[in-house]
Image (cartoon, rainbow, N blue to C red):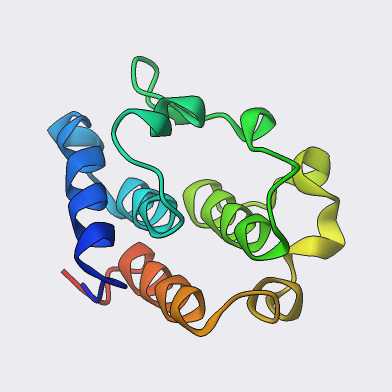
Amino acid sequence: MKFINDKHKTQYEQILSGVQKQKRDCYHKAFFFLMAAIGYNQQTITELYNFEEGCIMPEKFPCYASSGELAIYRLAINLYTDRNGGDALGGYEKYTPVELFSRVSNEWFLAMIEAINIRFERVK
């Protein structure tokens, strides 16, 4: 996997360590990879992911985030659920590739591409 930096890698590994082994599939890995890219760690990820039930909580995603963070949230939801989040983060039209990738920095753009590779098991 290609991480943005050491902090991204550390946060990803910390988050993944809290997930049951059977839940460490490509859906979870892609989701946690993106969340670690924007600064979530093992403590703060519980705001967006229910570890007991093993599911994301799109209704809890912060709507006050930057446009780049919202793009990452939207892609993470899509890669995890195979759907867009609908009105949870601004409506269906916000989930197009142009809307997602045009709003992020270079490093987040590359992290988003890597998350797609993870989700479709193009990397280990």
